Length: 182
Image: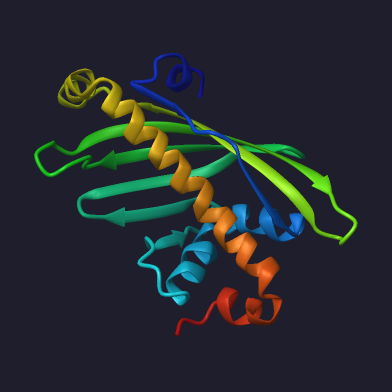
């Protein structure tokens, strides 16, 4: 993890996001990104396909990209995910190997209603040894950093959106999170 974080090609930190949810559900979603993605699809959102692997890792494949990741550390206020694979960052750019570390921080403030106000934030470190990708990052400058920040924000919304939905519509929870597809 250290070399990826120390020598990151791109580093992104997004602003913290706050939302009301049930803490146990939020943490369950973090452990089950495949089910979180399936919930989005059941709600009509064109979400990525995430597949669990037998060894606790997850995989995503799409448009020439493939990423495999796992949780490598977990505590009461956060998680660390490590990923490896290759991505095709854009139409004119070649597929390049990547290693990434995502550090998710979250804290909870209990409310009298039994739910909690969750505040989360993610920091992403992406490293590639691809000369083409490194050059593209330098050429794009601030735009590359902004795109990485937007990707970080999408990662937060991926989990918080379903956590909020589960909180606001508990009667729909079983249908949305069931393993069977529509």
